[in-house]
Length: 466
Image 1 (cartoon, one colour):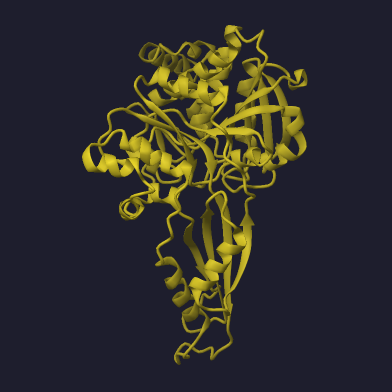
Image 2 (tube, rainbow, N blue to C red):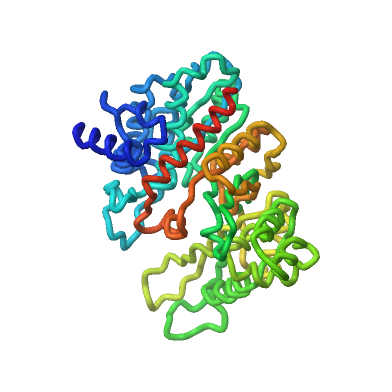
């Protein structure tokens, strides 16, 4: 295996040799390429709640390469650690690169073993290739390059690789545990974690140059349970005028077919103005003045769910369950589960009233399963956002960098809730197929993207050392 590692290192060192940090990543005393590290990391399944073995592996790589380790939990569902260029006891303001060890379960109909880490045509395949083991490899390589080059010793900042558990299920033993028990010890001045990649491939259409998004805010998870209990005749051969399943289906039909109202804010209209710079004629004019032409723009946004999610409070029906395995019994109780994502300033009580009004059935009980706290967007008026943007543009000449809001949730929200600056990005170019593969079958990432992303993070850290 060490011979294979060396050959991979040598071959990709020639192909992507512009990345100086490759010579400084060691596994078992051998120089190792980034794709080899990702391959090994993917091969250790770490579905949420079973992070310990994979966490121990990536921690051992950090230890072998000389970083200072702080452990914040040692078991499944609570395996978290920090690997820093200075000991945390130095109490320096800390630039944290945040990632998570856990992955979602393997999808059905994978063509390849989801935990093989197989490399085919310059692509690494497997669960976590992008989310989030691939991004973690980029982060770690950049930190090790800074560390091994020794140009950090006079830095006023510490730099930390923070790996946590339970992100995919937002469990209490991951980042929530770290913040509750070790926030002062970490002393974060900024946290950078997973987020959007280059976005033109997802939007579609023609663009003059790449657009990289840095997320400064996120929508909030607001998970709801709907329950209808109704005692009727139990035999399926006679259909009652009303029964629990029928009432729930009718109410859900009213809810999921209702078009959500679009909400325009300074943050989400900014992406439209950025897109406008790449358009011509009437399209350019409309997108440059989104609030004035809101009705026209909304009709087009609704055709692109990936974009429209930024402009509305979404309601997604994820499960309906009556706990009935018999075909001839009319159940007396049925539940439905909604994954709602709210704009940062949306009032929860007001939203529940909207749900109840739309259902048009006061007998359906609505209860909250999960409710994330409100957080303010992170300011872009600081050296961290500025240098992150500069690092992206150094590696992708002519590209634009724009602040956005994420439609999904990740661990950065827990830091924002504590008033810590937090920015989300995976600064690489991915095709739509790569983005669609996240949480889907045959997740994969180009080898080249690992090196490009690592270089961006490295350049960002270099700028912060100046």
